[in-house]
Length: 70
Image 1 (cartoon, rainbow, N blue to C red):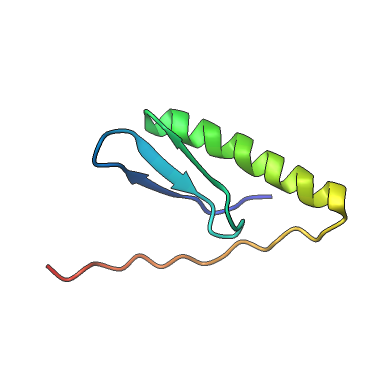
Image 2 (cartoon, one colour):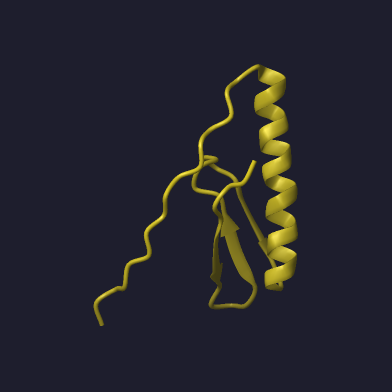
């Protein structure tokens, strides 16, 4: 299963990443690659927890990109 993730650079350095379809599933990393590796681990653990509970797996969500007014 594939899920959309959002990756943002942090002002102090590093990256914050999260999966909008999986409430509370966030991670971070010093590099983009590290953040992506970390969110893959986090989503796998999240989905395993849902399976263990017998809960349905959420569908992915559509994310729209918008530009902020300057």
